[in-house]
Image 1 (tube, rainbow, N blue to C red):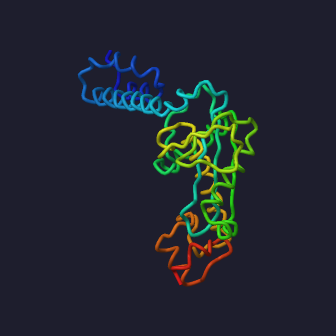
Image 2: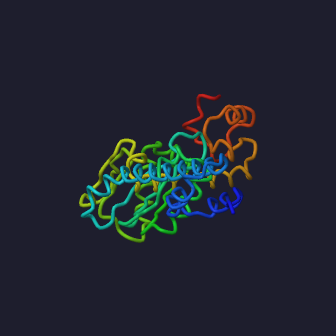
Image 3: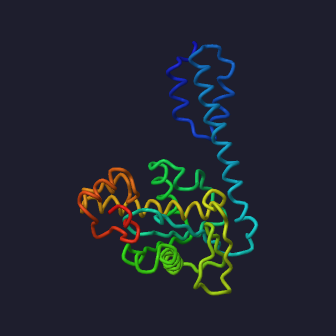
Length: 254
C-alpha cells in the first residue's frame, strides 16, 4: 500500500538535519507531485545548512590563525551612533571546538535569531564580559573614549583572562602591552568571536532600551533603540531631552 503524503510530510517535519539525506534518498524516486515538493523542501534545507557550515568555517580563519593562543577573545560594541542610551561592549571567549552556526554581525540578524544566539553564547562560551558607559560619560569624554572604557570594562569582567584580543576595527588603549590585539575591519562579519561579542552587546543594549521605553515612552525607545528615527526626533523637539539623551549628540535638533 502506497504511503500517504501526509505521513511523508510528518516524517520530514520530524527529521533532524542529519536525517535529511536519508529522507531525500528514500523518497527521491516517488513521482507524486506532493512528495516531490517535500523532497525539494528537504534538499533546500540541507543545501542551506551546508552553505552555513561553509560560511561559518570561513569566519573561523582568525581563530585558526591564532589557535596557539589559549583564550581568544572577541570584542565589539553597540551604540556609538544613537542619540540616547549607553554604549555597550561585549567580550566573548568561545571554546576551541565551537560549533555555533549563524554567528554574524548582529545588525545582519533578525531579532529572534539574535535572541536565540545570545542564549546559546551565554550557555556555551568559556567566558562573557559586558561593559557599559553612560550618556553622561559619553558627553564628558566623547563617544570614542567612552567606547574604549566600556571595552576595557567588558574585558575586566571575563572570568578567564584572555591571551589574545580580536577587535572590531580598533586597538584599545590602556591595556597591558603583553596582551596582543588584532584589529579587524568589519570583524563582526569575519570572526565568530567578534560576531558573538556583537550579538551579546546588541541584545544587552536592546533590552535596556526596551526598559527605558517604559520610563520614557514619548521617544519610542523600544522601537528605535535610541537612534535618530523621525519619531524620536519629533518627540525630542516636542518634549525636549530626557535623562538618557546624549547632549553632545542632539545639539543640532534645537
